[in-house]
Length: 388
Ligand SMILES: Cc1cc2nc3c(=O)[nH]c(=O)nc-3n(C[C@H](O)[C@H](O)[C@H](O)COP(=O)(O)OP(=O)(O)OC[C@H]3O[C@@H](n4cnc5c(N)ncnc54)[C@H](O)[C@@H]3O)c2cc1C
Image 1 (cartoon, rainbow, N blue to C red):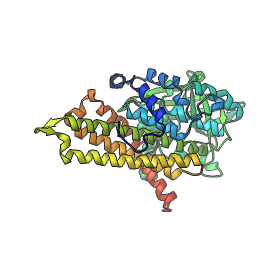
Image 2: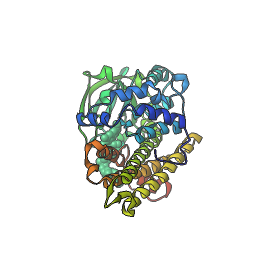
Image 3: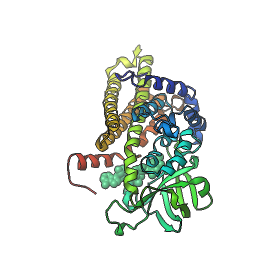
């Protein structure tokens, strides 16, 4: 286990997550990766242990833990070589209901999400034409009596085939008629169990890693008006308000990945002997490992700082973004270093390094790409002119 000064924080949780993850070793993930299959047994185990309900308040059946505790859970999942991407959204997507839903919506959905009986882990924001430019999305929701009629297309809607509910962002007022630039988008809770075959088509997309992502088509799908979350037209800010949690948790996964790569590389550098000595005795091999460690620790501090500020309340846009940026960079640098340290064996499936390398590459692009974080910092922190 990679040592850090904060090893004691949430030590009990970390230990029990590690014990659970030990039941899902490299072979388990390798087999799923080959088949691009969903890790059902792993997700069930995390659900039964209550980890995915960490952020749901106790009054709704969750464990009401802090974001730091939730981050510790996801970090450990990744530090053991497992992958939380199949289910991390179950932890935080519900935040939109918790913060902006009506009392009736909270009561109707949160207990089921907490127990795992209801899966809310599909998040339909990105579209093929608008991409990062969320305000230009084209999926529409038109009011018709006691329902909204949805038409359009989403892409990269991960876990849609393994979700009962989807949180969907759609346009309710044409962009040119919106009073404010950020108005006119609304958030809906779509019950996928009722929608399948009645206006929704889901096609899986095969990607470079095993991610259960899809494209989703909406064709006159009727969603009850009661499933609108919060006020019509205010959906963009509801979605934004949930993104800080997502960024902190995904940054923690990156820290976990970086620790896994560093541990693997260190162990290998000690045991692989060439020219009569361990390769790790050569500074050319030591230094990249040491640098990856320093980079990971610095990023980890920013993740902790973002979580601390989150728990204290207030605007943490800058810290959450920096945590995600630095942690994603740290995991990617550690991944590259780990392949290099292993030489040819870094490319062999049975070492799991090439799989984790592919998995951790995602975080340079999703859920927000590096450039967009940099432009946020440039504009909102440094006061540079708005670039888009
Ligand atoms: C495996 C996977 C899972 C995903 N899961 C989900 C999900 O569950 N739900 C969901 O809604 N989305 C999901 N996404 C989408 C993800 O959030 C987007 O891919 C990401 O935000 C980038 O958007 P894009 O792919 O449309 O790229 P684009 O917006 O087309 O951007 C392409 C490139 O141009 C850069 N760029 C764009 N505009 C600017 C600018 N103004 N300045 C500088 N650079 C710029 C971007 O940084 C990027 O590198 C997922 C994506 C992947 C690959």
